[in-house]
Length: 266
Image 1 (cartoon, rainbow, N blue to C red):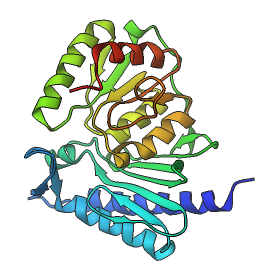
Image 2: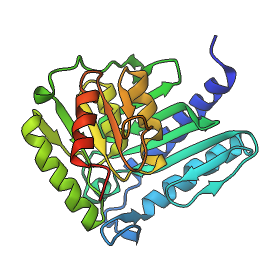
Image 3: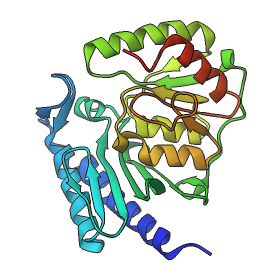
């Protein structure tokens, strides 16, 4: 029997993500510009990031006012219910700014530091990914499963690059060492979509350093519920130091290479 709390959280996450996705898709101004920057001058925030987060947090507060919230664009409250929402209102902001389609809304609900529900809404793909802890992962209602693991030298792996130049330079060195050992590397620009693509069998693996909780909370659950292994450095959970998601059989050798190359280090 489905837990009533989990069912409620999933329903709210799906609706909040749908509304924010529609706002971002249909409300994007033709003259969209940068409203602020974060870690560097090229790590940008637009007015639509801010508007989408306001829409999501307002909707959730209306239905569950006692929950905590952690949002990329500054929304933060402790709450008293034991449930916390982890929100990236627009994952892939630079793609969105340039009119590229790879961006998403990411919403997760967690309790006791465990993610119960994850939703990734990708409006330009017309795809909604969701997962419930122990209940599988789905895209538009169809169950997802990771690809059977190929040998590492035939694996298609995605990654991302930090907006801080020194970190990005190191990440480029890691990618240069990895490329001869893989089928190829992709760089999509949205961690939430990359993790969902691992779940959907469109990628054999994904890794990135420098992610924040809102970047990975929903996508990590979706990948795991589709059969992927996820983690960071050996024995650690995914984190800002390193996040890896891959089919079993790809995860272990990919993690070993990244550890050998020092992918978690500046």
